Image (cartoon, rainbow, N blue to C red; front, side, top):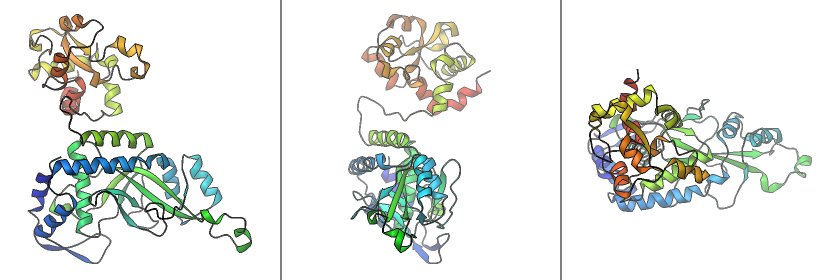
Length: 382
């Protein structure tokens, strides 16, 4: 993450008055003001910021167990009322929703609040956003995507654009929460009220979301809304783990974000070991001057039948440890090698020098090639 490069983009902002969509008050922006606000939010010390980001993500993770499923949150959104009835609550809970009573002194589970929830650990980071019926663009599509209202001031603009820039550059979308609150049977008459527990007059529902808009730090896009997408608890935990890895320097390993599920399946070992897709990968390797990491001979010196796909963690090892069973044929566990070098490994791991060649020194896993060149490889499938 290159904070200094993002900051430089703000130097190009010209002084002007802007009006945010849906609001009437004009906001004055200029490069000096933007740079001053940026320094307040993010500074220029990458190590300090990444340490703060890691702490923020660890804090955010503690709320994931209290989150509802995207389906339940969408159902709650579509009730379009600030009151939740008993039947409404049954619908939400049956879809995987968790209704949380109001918690005193909580910044999250508190009624009548709108707008952004700023991280208690860092002013430039967001814990979440609050949704109220009728706010801005009130549409939540079937994939759980929605636009959150444009920022109200320059600080908000910079937060939005930073979240997009980080997510786009690292290929790991930042995670936050969306929250809604409801009165719970507050419309009951006085007689019915006696049979209603007062401590649950208000209930809350939260769901993790990821950033999917890509406007970035650009003068023309400063006032744009933030596009978010509802995600499951499992995806939120996985993304949090990836973000924390991004915040930590691994001198002996290069961090790799997960491949999409569709890519994992399409290019798994079973689908490439003897298929047109496998031949396309071998052809791409030749055209791009790739070599066998074992003997270091160019793949142009081998016929297709003398090139194969090796496993970094051996198939025998994965068979012995069942938790690895669904990862053994993942493209990130595969690398291209000549048959001779692959046979010499038998059922063992590649030695450390060979592992380093595959994962660090430019040879790459099949997953690495797919992350950067999947479109090129697909064109060679015939």
